[in-house]
Image 1 (cartoon, rainbow, N blue to C red):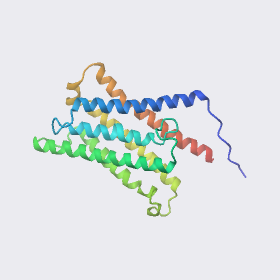
Image 2 (cartoon, one colour):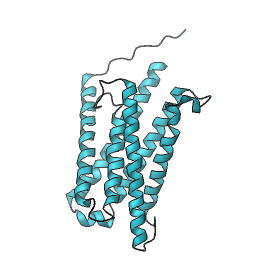
Image 3 (cartoon, rainbow, N blue to C red):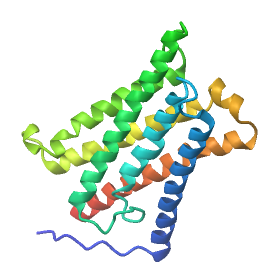
Image 4 (cartoon, rainbow, N blue to C red):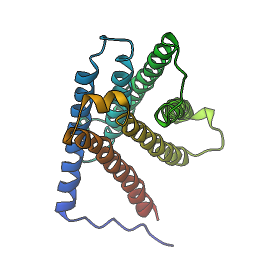
Length: 224
C-alpha cells in the first residue's frame, strides 16, 4: 500500500515572491480600473458606460473573485473556505452583471448611431467572452447544488471549473487588450502610457494563471 507523502516545504523566498505578485495584481486591477474610469468619464455619453463596465467586470471583479482563493494574496484568507466561496460567487455575479451592461451600452450606442455591430476583433471576441462568462457561471451551479450533477464528483467539478475559469479570464484579458487598440483609447493616451496600460491585463493574466495552475498541481501531487 502506497502512503501519501507530505509535500516538502518550499523555500521561503518563493512564498514571498507569490505574496508580492498577488499584492501587485490587486494594485494593477484597481489602478487599471481607475484609469479607464477617469478616461471614459461614465455618464458623459452612452458609449462611456461600455469601457467602464467591461473594465470593472474583467479587470476588477473577476480578478478579485479569483484572488479570493489565493493562499498568498487573498484579502480574506483568514476566513473559512465556505465564506470565501460566497464572496467569490458575489464578485462573479457582479462581473456578469457589469459585462452584460457593457454589452448593452455599446449595442444600443451603435444602434442609435446606425453603425454595424461586432465588426471588429474586439467586438467579436468581447461578445464571445461575455457569452462564455455567463455560461461558465451557470455551469458552476452544481458546485453549490451538487444534486444537479449526478455521477460527477465534487473534485472533478472543481477541476473543470478552474480550467474553464482560466480560459474565461484569459479571454477577458485579451478582449481588454484589443480594446486598448481601439480608436477611442489610442486617441485618449499616447506614448508610454499605452504600453503601461497594456501591461496591466498581460501581467494580471500571467499571475492569475500561475496561481490557479499551481494550486491544482500541488493538490494533485499531494493526492498521488
